[in-house]
Length: 283
Image (cartoon, rainbow, N blue to C red):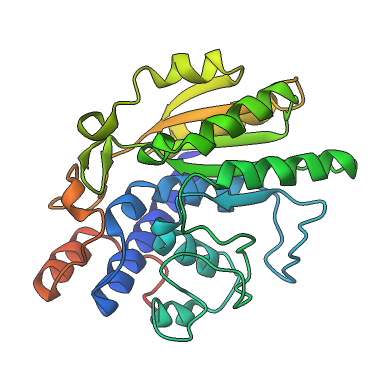
């Protein structure tokens, strides 16, 4: 990838991080830690990897790639990315978590927010939904790809593993799922709450093709996502284990589960914004 393109994507990522901390601070509510850690993934997916059509938004998503956010609490990064890639006005980010807003704390569908195709507040359900969408595309001879993102703590939900067995057993090979593997969840380190063991070995044993990557290096991540695309259509679903740092980009948030669902105060917001480049203009 050309250096200029990498710089553009990194600048976009920095702006998304500014959006995240400002959104969460404004309502003193939300989940900044995981959102900040996954910015490069969303940047890569919506700017380079997926074939998607922001306008007009079509809920069915025929003949375009689809994305389902399973760990819906990281809605700030999802909303900011959708707004910055043309799904709805950037100014609407000001309404995050407000009464009657389309930008609820977890994504919902009843308000008709463009880019959101499934409600995702309850963890563990996104993989099942994505499998249904992927099978629908197969039935309709649509060669597009379905993408999902999951938290590592979310893998403690049993429904994930039922879906994992089903996808492999039914050769759902137009599905690329990713795990945000930051090792943190709301109650502490994932290993202390309920260890996931050897994740790569688990997914291989369940019949998936598995890749590993650095989720906070846009160049490395882009390369992994492109490799994953070459593996579609070969009989197996694909899982990317993506190592990230919770709170990445804001030094006092990095690596701590304490910022899973806590908003920065006024002084903390200033510190965060001083660490993040404004590249596209704040809303």
